[in-house]
Amino acid sequence: MFDEFNISVPFKLDELYGGFAEGYGILAFDGKTLTIEYQAKDAFIGSFRSKVKTLSIPISKVRNFSHQKKWFKNSVIRIRVSSLSDLDKFPVDNRGEIVLKISRKDFDEARVFSSRFELSLAEYKLERL
Image (tube, rainbow, N blue to C red; front, side):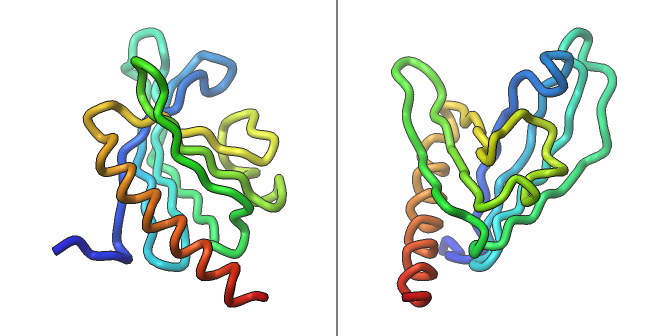
């Protein structure tokens, strides 16, 4: 049985640090917090890797969340937060938004993740009304 509050999906980040690195990681949700674990590696040889870093975003800080399938390409998860300070440790020029690329083979897993997270986000917002 799929655990509703311990779901995750792998992702890729392109053009970190001005195109000198790329990243890979896992997006997870435990029912209250989105957790992004990622590791950067150099884009040229791929032999230099950073330590695994973690960014936690409480559901209360998420303004918008979407999962979009692209034609002939990977799908994309977009996470928009309330404040730039919520993403100050994330290594992309984000303007308050994180864009995570999902491979075709992980599309179904990402779709389930997105449905469950969007439901939790909607329930959270309804509770606050």
